[in-house]
Length: 197
View 1 (tube, rainbow, N blue to C red):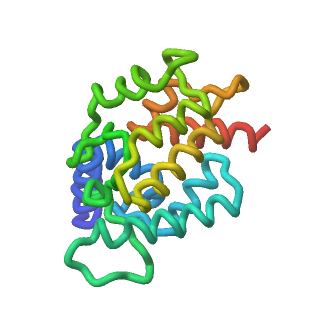
View 2 (tube, rainbow, N blue to C red):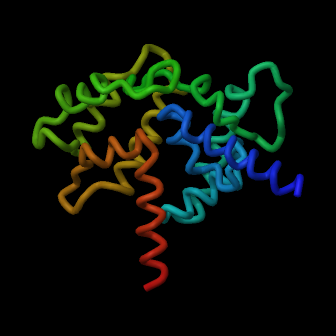
């Protein structure tokens, strides 16, 4: 009896933690496949595969993401060869040269989100073309922040390739969904449905 009572409490705690997550944590939590608050490279790989990415992209993403973020999310801890990312500290891994849509605490900043489209969406006010996306990346570059440039370029380019429509537009609602993490769940569902057909 004590075991089930303790697991109920544990489950309630997990749900409470999930509910209290900021938007950046929710964005990352999709990749926490076993829901323990830590994302290992194999979970990053599984998450990318779940949304329909190939083995090569999923492998490179797992190494690149976990290598780049692990130690930043584990301040004061000895580096781990397992490259874990602690979701509760993901805001500490925020890179430079980004859009500013997440603040330093990992909260969504609506004005910064709208700024993306006000400044860069010229052909369609609710979507970005490939060229407009490149313009956004260039405008967000901080001097000599090469790691930030690479991280931003990689994130946005993968998003564009995976989510552009037939006309080459990356829509506002898609970008909003990636920021709150709901895009990954939707993509996983769509990919799963395609596999089952």
